[in-house]
Image (cartoon, rainbow, N blue to C red; front, side, top):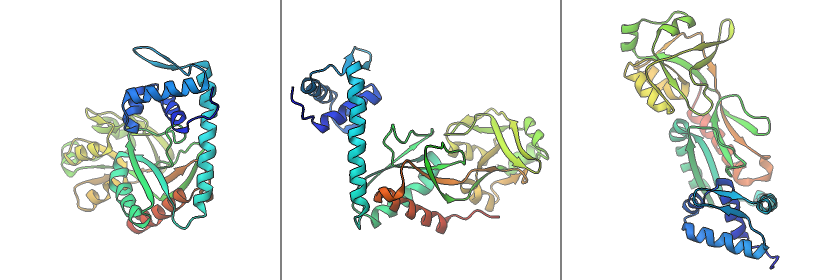
Length: 303
């Protein structure tokens, strides 16, 4: 057995172990599934152990593979920390910066911000992935998550980028047909556009009003996991929407939408979320600082 492990092969194994799929890893890394399988076999021969149990339908990690997986994670985490500490002392941050965000916020704010960040720091390789779910930063190798909402797991670090709130709104056409709700309980008799996006509880709206926190169950004939789809339905007069101010304030300003139940809102600030201190990673530090300035210049929440 040759004890000197090929780090590329080890990284490929870690990806396969996480995703339980040769084809998914091959697509991610731009390789063929046959090449991925070949590199795993080479690593197994190098270590003298069976790392994966393969069948026609699934891939499972062996007992020895679990041990190698744990060691491999430690090795790459150590290498990452070494690179971060070295790059932190450099004037220009370098390397791949992986950023995640939600679909709407990612398209409207994060994508154009990262476009400008790439001009300012040309040595960065920036990748943006948008999701309709919360990402696991550690398991998915994400450096920075730009998210909306004030509930953040305690093992993560979060820095506020902008104040934000979700408000209730509807089109004038809808309100002409259905009337304007006067109390929170009135929502039960209205068509509500329900969103299942990232951390939104489906069909339950938690709102802060004159009596404090209240919860109302809502329903409607239209629902989506995409906030921009629900926004368009709202413009079309299909119902009442609970949506972030950053997304609907233009429509409210032009009269396309009307805010209803103005005394009720949902706190939903915009955050930069990451896993380790900023002084250990130059690329994450400059990205967070840039995004704070970007949001401050382009987005202000009215009092």
